[in-house]
Image (cartoon, rainbow, N blue to C red; front, side, top):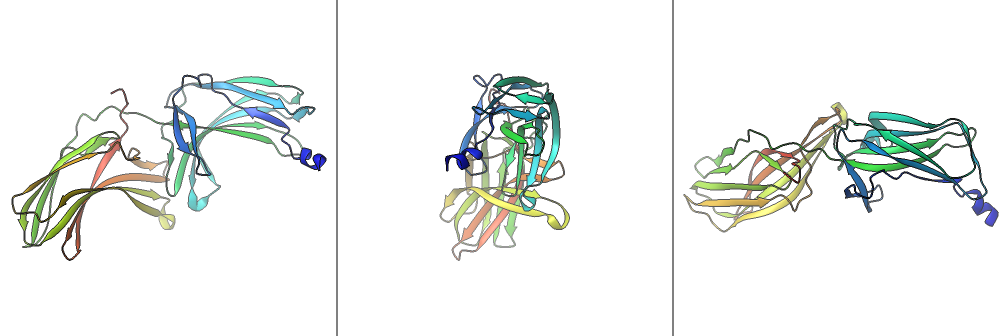
Length: 301
């Protein structure tokens, strides 16, 4: 039994420490098994450097056809699971063909890497960045090791940020006007606005403001659209009267938002909406939806 178990032991151990891993910020993400793990955080144009350490198992040698490390940016659509679309692919050759008898360390560096898209994990799509080390071998499977990292990109506050003003109503029954202070919000922002009741001839029971995320993936007949309600915020409980105004103040920081993404590599988009919902005493629902833009402002801004 010990001989059989030994046959399946890995022939070597591969680790990929980053050069600045002690000081680099890490963020919590969920891996493929749904478990929370901490991974290093980068942004576009940064250097990605470190070491590849290969340590053969005790008493074993590794004959190989070369060692390389790749930096990959990949998109995986879940209706096409297992097929990765590479939008970034960089490679560094670390070693010529030969034999490894003992632990060996290879330094590597990818300089000022262009990573224009952010890491994203949604309902039907995943965008990830990964370092992939491959030890090429003849007649047996290659030895491969992966190291994920996260990319987030920051933008300054927009110079123009118009308010949102809209009217919604049912002829001769209901006429309301709502106003939000701006149309673009950063991830830790606060939505501030007012709801005005200009005509009320139906009995409103309550009013809610929802934040919705709409994820669109694929194209043509393979287009999939998923809408999530991320929050429900009760604005009013009771019957409003004509001329009444209801203040709106909704903090975004408690919710797991991402920036708005427009047609990422022709594979997916993510949009956000404010959805105003009114419910009357007969439980009929009236709603008005308005798209907003969400962006990532640097935490020190």
